[in-house]
Amino acid sequence: MGPLSFGNPGALLLFLPLAAILVALYLLRMRRRELRVPATFLWPARTDEVRANALFQKLRPSWLLFLQLLALALAVFCLGRPQTRQRGLAGEVTVFVIDSSASMGATDVLPSRFAEAKKLAREAILSTKAGDRTALIEAGPVPRVVFPLGNDPARQTSALDALEGTDAEADVGEAMRLATAVVSGLEGARIVLLSDGDFEPIKDFSQGKAAIVYRSVGKGGENVAVEALGVTDTPRGRQVYAGLKNYGGEKRPVTLSLYADGKAIDSVKLEVSAHGTQGRTIDAPTGVRLFEAKLVTNDALRADDYAATSADPAASLRVLKVGGEDPFVDRALALDPRVTLDRTATLPADGGATYDIVVFDGVTSQPTKSRGVLILGDAGPGAPVTVLGSAKAPRITGTENVALTKGVDIDGVFVDSMQKVQPRAAGEVLIRSTAGPLLVAEKTAAQRAVYLAFTPLQSDFPLQVSFPIFIANALDYLGGEAGSGPLVVRAGRPFSVPVTSADPSLKLPDGSRDSLKAIGGAATIREARRIGEYELNAGGKPRKILATLQSPRESDITPVTQIALADHPVKAMAAPLRFADFWRTLAVLCLLVLGVEWWLYARRS
Image (cartoon, rainbow, N blue to C red; front, top):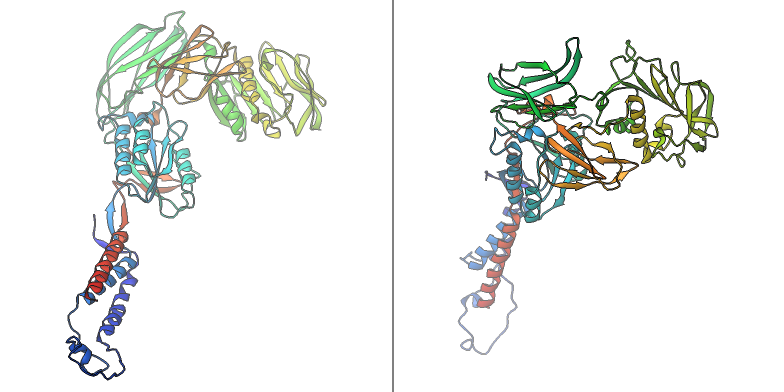
C-alpha cells in the first residue's frame, strides 16, 4: 500500500466554511418572548434559561458539537475520494491474456513459464475487490475466452487451473484484439498480457480506452532445437539430413538419434556452439516411409527436441499462390496438412519450377513449370480453356461424378459473373452452367490443370461447406492422391484428412480419444496441441499422424522485454499502480458517528 492521495482534493476545502457555520449555530442565542409566571421556585434551576438574551454567547465544550464536527470531517473526506496507491496486475476491469505457446513450456522458471503465468493470474484474481471484474483469454493457436467478465474468484480460478499449454505457435495478436473487444468502451479497463514476448509483432491493433500491461515471464534463453529434418535424392542415393541450432549463449553437448519407421538407424553425440548450428547427414534406408529425429539435451524446452518427416513424395506439397489477399483460399489451402504455402503478387521468373502446384487467384494465368496449376477465375496463356467473353449470374445445369467433384455440392451457389470459355482438346468439362463450362480439368504428360470460371470472391462459394472440399480435391488431383501412410503436421494448425467412416476418432499422445465428425468424406482436426504421435481410426483403419513444432520463433526462448503493438512499444513491468478508493468505509463511519450523536442528544432531552 502506498501513500494517501485524493481523487477530488478540491472537496476538502468545504470543511472550513461548513465547520464555521456549525460552530456559529452554537454561538447564536435563541430569541424568546417574555412570559410572567407567579413564581420561579417550581421551575428547575436552569441558569441558561433565565439569563438575558443576546446575539452571541460564550462557546462551551459540548460532546454534540465534537461529534457533529467529526461527522462533517468524515463526510468531506468522503467527497474528496481518498485513495491509496497499490501495486497489482488486477484493476477494476481487467482482461488477462495468457500466452499458451510452446515457448511458454520452457522450464527456466520452475515448473514452467506457463505455470508461472497461471500463478500470477490466480494471485491477481484472488486479490480483486467486490466491485472488480476480470476475464481470461487463452492466446493459443486459436484464441478463446476461458471465462467472461465477472467477479466469481472461486469459479474463475477453477477454470484457470484447468487451462493447459500447447506445443504450437500462438496467435497472440488475435487474442489481444479479442481482449479489446471484451472491454470495448469501458473506462479504466486494463488488458494484462502474461507472456515471454516470443511471438510475431502485432499489427492492425487499436487498444481503445484500455490500458495495456505486459508482464514478461521467463529468465533465460538456453535451448537447442531440431531446426530441420528432410529427405533428399542425391547422386549417391537417398539421404536424410537433420539440422540443429543452439539459441543459447553457451556451447551445449547433445545426443541426436535418427529413426526410420520407428527403428533407430543412427545415434551420435555432438557439441553445438553458442548461437551456432550443427548438421548430420546419413544414407537413408530404402522403402522407409517415415523418418524421426530425437534430441537428448539438458535445455529449457522439450517441444523442439523432436521432428518427423515423411519420405512419401505425395505427403508434402509446395504450393505457390499468385494473386491478391483472399482469406478463404488461404484458409482452404492451409487445411491440407501436406501444403507448405508461399504467396507472391507475380509469377517468379523460373515459372514456379520449384513448386508442386501454382494457384492463380484472380490474376491472369501464365504458363508454369510446376506439375500442377489451379486457375481461379482468369484464364490466360497455359490455361486448359480459351476465353470467349463473360456472363452474369449463370445457373448450374450439371455436374460429372468424378473424384474432383466428390462431396462438392455447387447447385445452390450464386455466381455474380464468370468467364465464358471453350475447353481445349484435352480439357474435360466437369461442371456445366447456362453460360458454358464452369469447371474444367486437363491432364497431360507434363502437367495437370484445373480451371474454375469465376473467382471465389465473385460468389458465395467460399461460404459453403463444399469450398474447402473442392480445394482439397483439386490438390489431390494436381499433386497426387492422398495416401494412407504416416502424416506429418505442424502442431497447432488445423488440417483435414480423407476418411471412409462417418464417425472417426483420434487417439492423442496421452492415450485419450476424441470423437470427430466427417463431412464430405473428410475429418477436420482443429488443432494438435501437443507434439508426438496421434492415431486416426476411421472404419477400423488406423492412420498415424505425427505433430511437430519446428518453429525458430518458438525455439528462441529468450524473454522479450519490449513488445510492439501496432508500432507502439510496450515495456514489460512487474506490476502497475492501482488507486484503491476507501470512501465507502469512511461513509459507514460517518453514519455511525451521527448515530452516536443522535443517541446523546435524545438522552439529554
